[in-house]
Length: 215
Image (cartoon, rainbow, N blue to C red; front, top):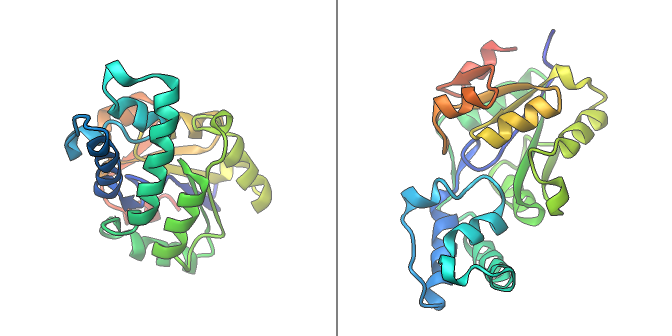
């Protein structure tokens, strides 16, 4: 079957946002006199939304629902200030998007990052390529729930089998499978090739240009 659309995860797939996310959360932790974490540690906190990241970053002794909610709000406020400060596209991504656009492939972003921030980053870093950028509006719709991905396919008037879902995490691969889309993992993100394949990736690409071969 010829693929006619691609849905991309954002963090770890299109952009390296690790430092901005980590810096924002560490600012919150420092303000509370809690221990901070390294970038390497945050790499494994990313993928299930910022609220989940906050829970993982907080000390176990201060991980109540109220504390998580308070720190989540502070984290979003801090992250909003810096979300495009150090965040950059991975090498080859802009060239890939330009090529896909020239082939009239439909392109969208679906992230577990807050919807407001997903739209902001997509608009500022990739102003010319995505007709849709969807983030997390409610915990019920968090990936691997495929609802938003399927909604994108409906808006495109495409069958889900005609769409490639590209991501760097087990959650992305599960989302693709749940949506009956073609799951493609990327090796340059926050998870290993082994994790991606174990979670359902049909293919793991090592360079953005390899996605062109699937079309």
